[in-house]
Every structure is written in C-alpha cells, then in structure tokens.
Amino acid sequence: MAPTTPWSSTPIDVQDPTIVTGQRGTAYSCPDLVTLDGHLAALCCRIRQATPQFPSLVRAFRDDVDLLLDRRRWLELTSA
Image (spheres, rainbow, N blue to C red):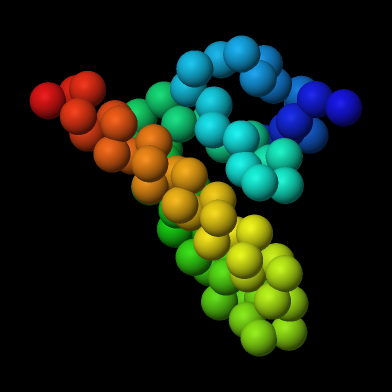
C-alpha cells in the first residue's frame, strides 16, 4: 500500500524528493520550510496528546520529528 499524507488518504509518489517518509509509513510533503514547520507543529501537538498513555506512539512521533528536522536542515543549507 502506498503511503499517504497525514491529511489525505490519496496515495503519493514515494519517489518524489520533497516527500519525507516517517517510521510508520506516514508521508510528509516538505517542499519548503513553511510546510515542513507545519508538520513539526502538528507532530508536537500529537506528542502532547499521546503522552503518557501511548509511549510507542510518542516514540514514533519523535522519530518523525527527527527525520523532519534533518530535512529542515537540508532545506536551510540548499536555500541559502
């Protein structure tokens, strides 16, 4: 099954270089810093909501945050 974005069930092209795929298969479209920052903010909210009842979800969300921060750093370096 092809990954989808957090806001849509429409399959996305995983070969697209602007897509970051999370640890659980969630695909985040990250063409620019503004969009990426929106994903980070949403994940931070999800972490707060899942803590402490769902530690495995918290870990997965934090792993996705790490991946998105790597992408953010790459975007910062390439857009300067």
